[in-house]
Image 1 (tube, protein in one colour):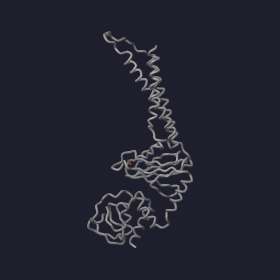
Image 2 (image 1 turned 45 degrees about the vertical axis):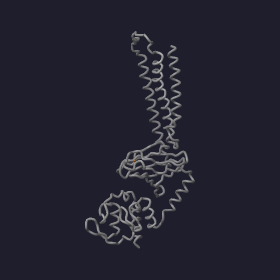
Image 3 (image 1 turned 30 degrees about the vertical axis):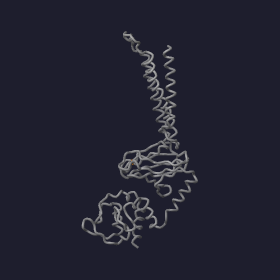
Image 4 (image 1 turned 180 degrees about the vertical axis):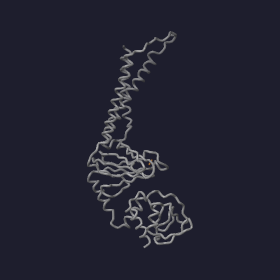
Length: 336
Ligand code: CUA
């Protein structure tokens, strides 16, 4: 009996030190969403169960190693034990109960992260190698950073332009794979609870630049968010040429196409509209609206002489019709 009392005390001591020790390690970044609350609660409960199971095994093990060590000169056989049906039933039923209870907690936490707020703001998340774009469908503009008002639920509808990515903001806890293909949209609901700056990380290995597939997330006060929306709206010009220049920068066309005549991976846009251009296959074309439209949507269709088919990112498919038209207007304006 005295052994059991000692082991019990040992198990309690190990449980408490491992439990508090694991929590003190700060395994989780600060919590910043409502959906994360039930996840964290579950996580810390599991830490205590883990600490207890660890203590139960290691406590008995350590105690036995030290106290029941074979004495010097003792060559006798160990005691013989028969099974103990009662004990076996207990150690089967009790863990089963605990596992079922945690399954219940897990499914309630999952349900909690999916709780629908009908007033949620809609944002479409587009992932592609290797960047994120956020379409504010309620306002009609796009952004390369995710800006959210605090304490309001946002419904993120996610789609990928190429391979599988995964949307993950550690402080929000919830995570969702972003899949390519029609009808493969996935949803995630987030209600930010803390004003601050965070980062979206891609959590699915998606190619060369996977590790750098980041985007800024800013959670603002309600009035701060409204100011940001107003600024975004104001920057959407009525002039298609100005909009086109905007897309030229936002969608990264500038990486390969100069507007000052210099040669980059793709042809410059300066003064090309209306020109006759020789193609790699020996034919030639006049650069008009149709040719530009085709080149934006299907970059490999006609390659200009002297350039490689470097597989332009599917930028055109990522833009809506109006944006593509704006870009064409911008290219035209560079020949006037
Ligand atoms: Cu996208 Cu990893």
